[in-house]
Image (cartoon, rainbow, N blue to C red; front, side, top):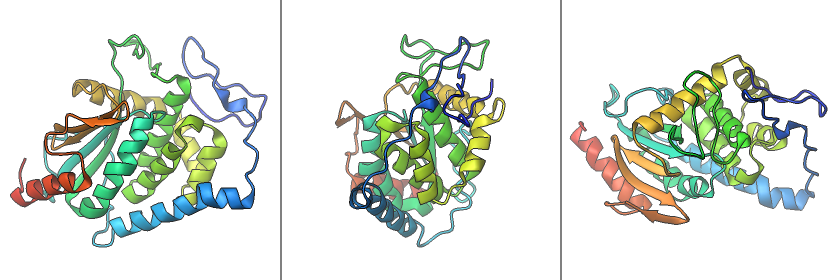
Amino acid sequence: MALRYASSPDEKVRFSDPPTILPYGEPRRALHPLRERWIKRILPAILTLLALFALFRTTFVCNHRYDPGKPMNVLEETEKVPLEIHVMSKCPDARDCLQELILPTMVEVSDKVNFTMSFIGSPRSPAFSIDPDSDAVTCKHGPGECLGNIILLCAAKVYQDVKIWLGFTNCMMSDYPDIPKRDLVESCAMEHGIDFAKLNTCISDEGEGIGLLRSSIQRSAENNVTRSCTVRLAGQVRCVRDGGEWYDCPGGSSVQDLVGDVDELYSKGSI
């Protein structure tokens, strides 16, 4: 069953079988006053864009290709180090992980890593299940999170330049309680140069969006990842952000700790 945003407030959209009605028909949020919008949305977006453009000051990133099914224990032909995060789109720990650790790290070592984002789920968890005979999925924070995950996966597929889709992801997760409201998606798309129509085509295409989410979830399950946010480096768990705390970080949880590990692995040229 295809997913898409409703074309009118009265149109209902089905997500799974049995059907679950998503809140696409909710009224758009009232426009903020100019000053409040500048402080809350535009200024952070400008700062994020500056950081992301700095991220690519020494390299062109057309070879940062997103492939949720690609093994992470093999280096790219350019000997880049696999760096992966496993998240849930409506999770505050995912937002903190991205903003406190991943984005600053990418600014330092983007030319040395192959970055991937996967989504978390467990077929054995009561809060999350996958019907092996159906494409329907259920997410921990509800159907809105499933759609939010699909939106982010589609952005990564349609815009394979990591600075675009990672900036878009950061914009969305900054307001994670509002995922997947259409006005948030449109606003973040506009700020990061994403064509909403192209994004919506991926979301709406029969089987494509759900297929991306299912593959991403299976990838996390195959690597026994259940906590958002889990950071893996070269196929091994490097750090976990959960419950507002960092733990399981044997090499330290700071940006410089992670940057140092990437530099070391990159200099060795093998995993």
